[in-house]
Amino acid sequence: MRLAWLVPLSLTSSLALLGCGDDIKEGTDDVGESGSGSESSSTASESGTSTSETGSTDATTDTGSTDSSSTDATATDTSSTDATATDTSTDSSSTDSTTTDTTDTGMPICECAPNTDLIYVLSDDGELWSYDPVNNAFDQITANLGCPQNAAFSMSVDRNGVAHVMFQNDDIYTVDVNNPNQCMDPMYQPGQLGFNKFGMGFVSNDEFDPCDKLYAHSWNGQGGFSEGPNTGRLGRMDPATLVMEEIGFINYNGGELTGTGDGRLFAFAGNPAKLVEYDKETAQVLATEQLNMNLTNAFAFGFYGGDFYLFTEANNNPTVSKVTHYDYDDTKGLSTVVMAAPIRIVGAGVSTCVPLAM
Image 1 (cartoon, rainbow, N blue to C red):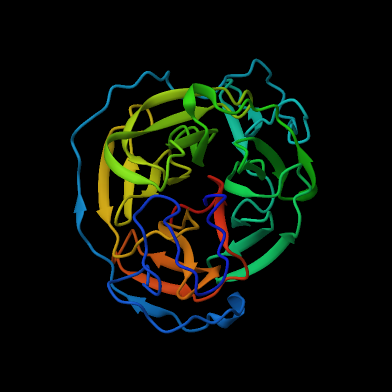
Image 2 (tube, rainbow, N blue to C red):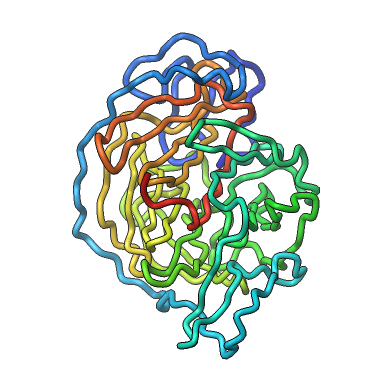
């Protein structure tokens, strides 16, 4: 996620806040209280030694709830009992989120396309790369998405391996990560219900139903991102129609989302940065974990193997991102695993096919 007017002019330029957090002073490290030395502009292969950092382990549970105007996010049944997969990723009028078969009982089976077990990351000028958290390796998928727009804002990837990319003009186009040279127009109508620019993430319906929907974290487009009572909204779209429905109000104006294959929804937002888990049916906060870091002008994150990978601008080098691992299911510690990625990352797409635990 980034703002169109916040592209760095030089490495010494002061940066206004982009995304969900407060202004970051020049030279301030986004992890911890004090800045570190200048970062290398090398690629991910230079990340052999991780710098251990200690994250806050303050995990609080919020009990306040927000009324929801949404409908239940249930999977769409199909009357077909034929177990032949139907590929809809190249449909120019709509993009189905899953390859759907049915069981003998008529329940849908949303299978995983090849290569949906990786994190996909997007640069602010439309370069698409994969990131493998197992070995911290980046691989370029394409240098140009071939879409009518290049200035990217956010991205998410579904179980079909279809990347949904939001651009700075608020429109969404789709790109198959296994066939990245065909940018498709799913006929999304920008600005529905006042959701203009938003962070996004696919989430499975529940632990028994892997079929997924696309969730949206609103931003009002006014200045930097902020935090306060009912300053943002949570929304949801069926990727087959891309029609927005509002779920409820949230306390963050701007943020990114990621989801899991067992139906959990998380946000990376706040000032300072927080990891927030939502009830995806009501927008009620289930838990909030304070992170010992700040957001930067460009940021994204993704769930993988029980943990989270946070992409923020590299220290003293805002033209590229670094990768921070948050050990969510164990120590609650932060460690920098890649000091300088090959691109400045504004979107991270993680399908619900990635492992739930490692």
